[in-house]
Image (cartoon, rainbow, N blue to C red; front, side, top):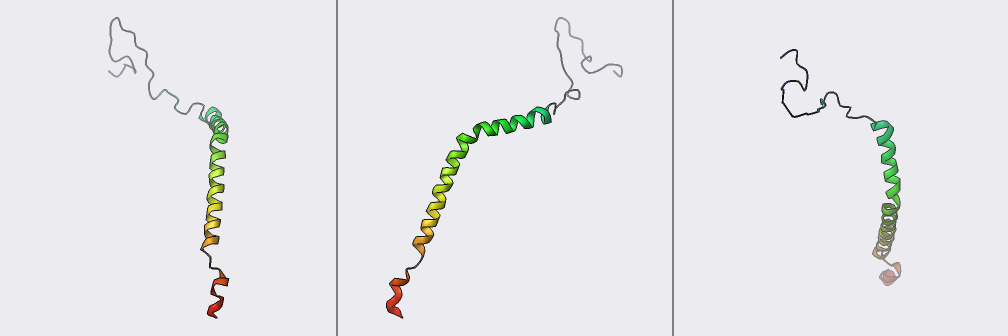
Length: 83
């Protein structure tokens, strides 16, 4: 068994199989040259569909918080008679 290589361990007649060893595969082939630019391209293409609603929601939230803070303050004119 020491002289046999990967894929030659069994002999099947009439069936042709092609295999690639997991140790011969390049798991990160093209990850830097194609993967990272493709990630930025995909984010940029979806930015309009995600960014605009997100920005509008933030503006509504910010204005609501400012109005809530303004309404929670006491009016000094309501307490002038207590002095």
